[in-house]
Structures are given as C-alpha cells and as structure tokens.
Length: 622
Image (cartoon, helix red, strand yellow):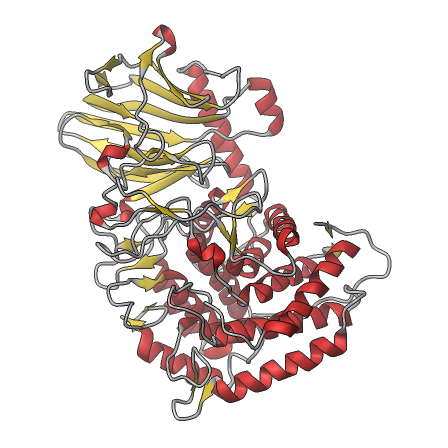
C-alpha cells in the first residue's frame, strides 16, 4: 500500500551490531558504523550531502525486490530495456566457529551483482561522508586492495572487481557493461582495531552469501507460530532480530534518527536507544514465537541496566545500559523531505515515566512463566522497585508518549504502577520473591485500583479516559486488558474500545494514538492498531472481527513486509523512524493472541507458576 518516494521505499539489512537502509533505487542512504548509534557514514536519507552508496543500472529501469526466503538478505531486480540485473545486499553473519575459520571483517556490507538477461550498463557511486556528513575525509586508492578512507582511528575500505576512479569531487565512480551470466562484487569493510581484514571478492563473496543465508534460515527455523499471516510474523521476527544489539541483548526502538512523524514538521527524534516502556511487550513476543535466547538476553540486559540506576529508572538507555548522550541538533542537515531539526541523542532520557516499573516487572513475569528463576540480588532489586512505586505512584509524569509539555496524571502510568505491584505479589505468592513487603504492596495496589476506577472512569462518556478526571482518550487505554486490570469483555472495556475507535479511528483499521492540539499531521500509530486487534482477540470482540482487523493492518506493511512507527491513513505511506520495533512487536503479540483465540484457548494467561521445590532453571542475574 506504499506510494513511491516514501520512507517505506527502503528495506533494511543488518548483522546484530548495526543496520543499513537500502532504497528501491539500489542506494544505501543510511549506515552507522561500528554501532547502530554511531555517527552515520551514509546519511543521504536526511540530506543528499551526507553520503550514499548507489549501485544500479545507468539508465531507466523498473525495480522489484524481495528478501531471500526466511532471511535478511535483500534481492533487488532491475529490469531495463536491454536486460535484467539482480543486486543482492547483505551484512554477513556466521556461527562463531565460522568466524574463527574464515577470519571475517569486523563490519562488512556485501553487494553482489548478476546479469540474468541481455546486457545492462551498471553504474556505482560511492560517497562516504562520516560524522553525519561533517567529515568527508580523503579517499585514496590502495591499488588491488581498492579504496581506503581513514575515519579517526578506524579504516573504511571498498574492495571490488569493478573498475574504480576517484573524481575531482572526491566521489568514487565505476561504470561497466554486464552481459548475461556475468557477475560483479563489492565489499565494504570497517575496522576499529588493527589488523584490518580485507576479504577477497568473487567466489569468497558468494560463499559468504551462502553462509549468511544458511545462518538466517537456521535462526528462523526456531520460530513457533502457526496462525494467520505467518509470513508477516516471520518478517516481523526477522526485523526485530536486526534491532537486537547482539553483544548486550538490548533491543533498540529503530536503527534511524529523525525520520519525521509529520512531513515538514519538527517531530523528529533519535530512536537508536532502548526504551523500558517496550520491555514486557517485547519479551512476551520473543518468548511467544520461540526465541528464548533473545528473550533471556533482553531480560538480562533489562536487569543490568536497571541495577545501575535503581530504584529510580530511566526512560531509555544505550545498548550497553548506560545513559545516552545529550540531545543535540545537527543544523547542517536539511532533514528528510525538509523535516527539521535533525536530532541525535534523546532528551526523553531526563523525563519521568512511572509506567516503566510495570513494564520491567511484567517482563520478569514472562521470564518466570517460561521457566526462569530469580537470584537473591534480583529479588532485592525487584522489591526496591516495588517500594519506589509505593512511594511515587500518586504523582504526575510525562507518560508513555513523552510530550515535552510537562507532567500530568496519566491513567496508563497509574495502571502500570498497579501492574508492577500486582506482578510482584504474584511472584511473592508463588514463592519467587523471598523479601517482598507483601502487605505494603497489597495496600498500594488496592489504592491505585480505587483511584483509577473512580477518577479515570468517566461515566458520562462510558469510558476510561487518558488522564485522571479528564475527558480525552488515548489508544494505550486498550492495554488495561493486556495487563489484567480489566477483563477484555467487561462493560467498561467495551465502552472504552468504542470511544477509542470513535475518536481515534483513522479509516476502518488504523488508530491515532491520541488527538491533541499538537497532533494534526501525525500519522496513525502502527502499534495502536495492533493493540486494537489484540484487544478484540482477547475477548473484546469476535474472533472474526479480530482476524479481519489484524489482516487489514498487516496489509499496511511495505512491499518487503516492514513497518515504520506511523502510517499515513490516506496514502498508506510510512512515517517516522524505520523499521520500528514497537510496531513489529505489536504485530507479533496480536498474532499470538489471535491464534490462541482461533484454537479455542484462553488468549491471555497471566498467572505466575508456583516455584518448583527442586529444579534447576535459567536464572536471572544482574
């Protein structure tokens, strides 16, 4: 449902450390090395002057693309008047023993070309611009080893069997005619430490492609899901895997910064960090489709990051659990389609969001439900978090959507504080917490419930509202059922769903997250639509209603199955940072609940299993 020239014209490749956006025109317009939150080497998506690496036919062409089945290896087929050319893009990945045997580079992008029919004039333009375009550097030829660029203490190297020339403008170009059956190869590597590994191209490149395809397909073979739109769930799992920073287990919100939620506007944020608000939804999605290793790693990262600041939790952390850098504006960049400012860093790190306590504790509950156990240090940490909630739940905060207009009494934050204490009491009652002050937790849990049921319920509207004593609604109210505060089929939840759909509906399927004086021009929020589908699947509607909505929402993915943060309700175009973990997590969770509903099972089972007396299980440590 994409129209040409949108954010959705990109696809993504990655290796668990970084990711690159590849356009339909064969141009890599976004790449940050060595880490996903490093300064960009290619940034043309934000400004043409910030660099790109384009490989495509020299003349007019039509492009179609796909991912190789069950992988993050991208194939783009260019059809020209004279022939057909296939471009395969990947960041190599391999098993640990293969890395040792083959001495792989620290970072690499491979671009493999094959002419399938006729003949095609191929053109390559290589224009790296480090430091978000501020440090162009000097490209120099190193003979048979290709082109080299020194970036601070690191080395960027382009190695290819195409004939290269460095122009007076400092741009590397190549042009060659490929005929049917002929191939070409290009490898871009990055090294932060000596010695740099510069692999050969040709047969080596094709063998690396085979290893990478095999790695991804073996990973996907673990996936457990047999329900509606399985292909969408598989692609969402693959997209989510690209947002896992493998060395720590952290999950970034998106691999990009400043892609606009409103074209030409200022709603442009850096999402290359890890938000605690996404925690329980992400852990549940990973466990639910069979990726226990990733779920355990993310839970361990959560507990590590929260230990560093507990009992006070930050809104977001970097991939190693540290405080992100200060937000700043890159005023030399024009922004995507003129959308300024371009920001790096995120000032939300200094906000207060009380909902994160419920998210972290609920993530631990999913961990325990899957057989994990808690050590004594984690026991003490969780109890301290609960005590903090008891002291502060009745205070205003910025809330889940991080407005910069001040703190208010958000219903969602109150409910997540309730969920935090409810979850801790479940863990205590089933023997997983040894030191919980249960009486204190119960007293405050019931006080929160009384407040939400009286002050967040608007009887005149027949709905819960987004703020205490208010009359506005927010799509996050649909999560009251998800966290167990209300049953999905209750009269209050049905009334809330009705009003959310009435006020926030964007067409027949999509939802805005809220409607305020600042929101006109924003797209519909992708994950909110999937929250609605999951709410129906939980019992708020019929199974047929849930399935129909879910499948309509899946159709808003771009041509390779990826979602941004938001969707233009009129054109279907992607808006906001891309691809967005939160949207893909919402799709997976809605699919899991829908599949259970269709199978006649209880869609949401939140009970914590009793701790076994003698059984060795995965243990969470900070």
